[in-house]
Length: 98
Image 1 (cartoon, rainbow, N blue to C red):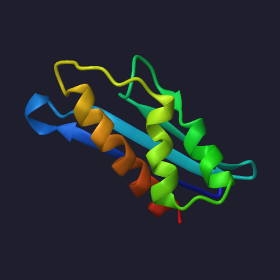
Image 2 (image 1 turned 180 degrees about the horizontal axis):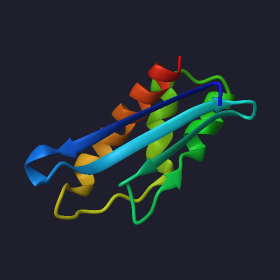
Image 3 (image 1 turned 45 degrees about the vertical axis):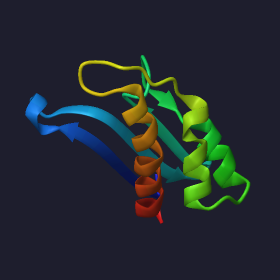
Image 4 (image 1 turned 180 degrees about the vertical axis):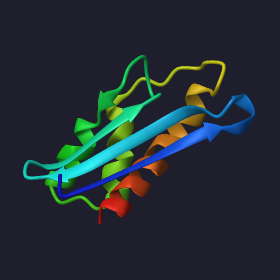
C-alpha cells in the first residue's frame, strides 16, 4: 500500500478490550477500509469505498459506513454507541490517509 492508517476505541476499565476499530489503506486499486467490532465479524466498508471513488469528501463517505454493518449490544458497548462512533473512526482514518 501507498499509505495505511487505523483508529480504535477501547474501554480501559474493561482490560483495554477494543470495542471498535477501523483500518484503511491506499493502494493501486484505490482506498480500502474495514471495520471490526461493528458486527459479528470484521467487514469491508465498501459503501465508504464507493463514495470516495465517486468523489465524496471524508465526512460524506464516513456517513455511509453504517450501510455495511449491523452493530449489536454486548458487554463492552451498545449498538447505539457503535453507530455513533463508527463514522468518527472512519473520518479519522480517512484524514490520516490524506
